[in-house]
View (cartoon, helix red, strand yellow):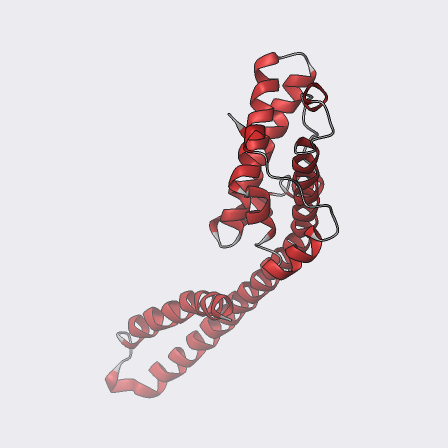
Length: 212
């Protein structure tokens, strides 16, 4: 609601200021000795101005509606990415904490983070402009961090040993700081995430797993 009020005020502010300025300017040209002609001229000018202002307002509302629709669709798609990311990291964490799996089997290149809709949306310049507003500024910041993980995983697949170690370290940091959960909390409640967690076995805590 607050967002809509601010955006509506922005839409009306420029046309309103323009009308006030023009009215002030036109009143200076009113001839007191010949008010009838002056008022006719003023009326014609105001008619043109109001028509122009109405067009500005319509365009403003069209842009507002378009932006709001883009936000709604983007959030819905990004929520699916957040679900996928959370599941991906959670299962990796679960695998790393299994006592019955040899440590050497756990030392592999982590799975690539699925950024399906993010990779599609970020090609749109209008979508990238959403980064100026909440909650997109926070979402973008986290998604860029996951992009960094993927870039290291890609290098690791090419044989870069340093990237391999960094990819694992970034995964560990993600788990330790709960970054994947912070992202999902922008779309779901704690209770909803708890219900997701209940679908999977609870990983055993082992502090030795995450020594960086």
